[in-house]
Image (cartoon, rainbow, N blue to C red; front, side):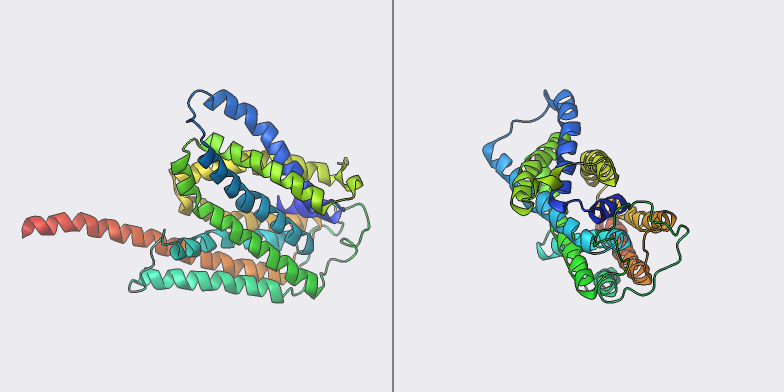
Length: 325
């Protein structure tokens, strides 16, 4: 998704229009499925729950994706996929602040968690302030670009636009992490996962329409062309928005956020390989920053997993000790 979205933005597609079309495609895909599968089993939808879903969609989908997309237009696909690895760590940090998650600094695992958070933010700093040389690509022709606009003429970003891009993508990730943390309480309020997802995307589509109206006044940029822009909208709308959002909520509810987070570094690896094959720019700074962030992510995941195992052992040992007494 990072590669095709970046390609669409470099071809001149408006970020706000892209986000609108992406979620509109997702709604068209999800609404019939939700209607067929959950029209009889879904719980009643109250005004209070509807308002919660609307607010969740505003900051967690419309806001975060619009901010992130603007940042991606200023940076690179590799840096975008690298920053996505920060999401679980930021979610953990926010959960601690909201007292949803505990942090015991007396345990070794607690120290490792903090170390992982520091590593992730260090990776963001590396991304922001060190681009480094471009790595050799397998393909010297940029296959996703056919026009020569200001975004495409040079592969090396200016320091100002690069910093702005990293900052906006990080800000979008923080909003998305906040949404992830609060999905548990939201599922408690409205447990129908498919309809929960669909309604949030419906609200997000409406919100994105008004955002696009305000941001993009040139309606000629609303037209979809038969190029990478159309591919990006269809791919992001069906696989990322419709299928991806639902699968994330399903995995979080059934296997927990740790299992979901463990697969995220694969995105960075795949993005680097595809960028090399497609002739897209891959800088040394993006790779180094991504490696540092992945290291921080696995520090937090390892600490969380081992802490859960230790707590389970302590709980199992407690009744045995009481019996012996």
